[in-house]
Length: 303
Image (cartoon, rainbow, N blue to C red; front, side, top):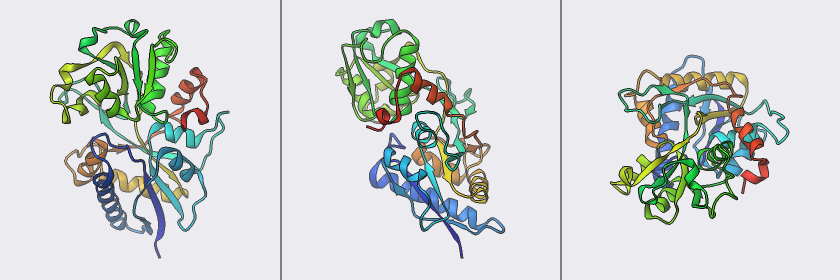
């Protein structure tokens, strides 16, 4: 009898599809992953149908002991993973571990020159009509974040501002939480906000709605963050399950096979076809440093 693993994802894992379309894309990926597991000699693991949780619920779910399954798999955002793995004092839950990271092409470079990396960046951007060019010029403007659960839509850009001597709340005329990357980008595009925060592809993604997005919006000089570890595949499971699932991921969506069926499935919701690689479970501690810099606790980021 197969040993079963549950599988979850969060509803805004993709900026381009949501709802039923996102569910269909995740289901396709899980079906391919199950097929890959079944093809591996000696494997007895099988993954259940995927379930969607909002980030706070997913964090609690991945931490709780498995019931009716031998382990759990979750596609998580970096901050959600960190908050599931560490408490406010830095104590680690060793049952919750990132086993793989999705690779992305380097930000800010043409595809022909960009290399696959296990990181991405956040950016602060504006509408060209604001005539904001540098970080110093954002003071007393209208700033938009997305969600307090978000890595690149709040935590990292807020810390980046503070590291540059600009308080992410008091230095602005008003700070708005719009709910997501695309919502923030739309508001900046339409002039309802002066400055937006988001991941490194947020301007390009908006082209699907507004063809001139890349000429209307621009990254502010000095607005790029340091590298952020990319989205992890996380497990709470026995070691042999972690090993098998990583082996299947690496076989299904290999870094050197961007045109494979597995990488096409990943691209349909994660927007990248660069494959998976291993990652140190503690690589996301850089986000813990951002939390401490901003004097934030877990409860502040789960609103």
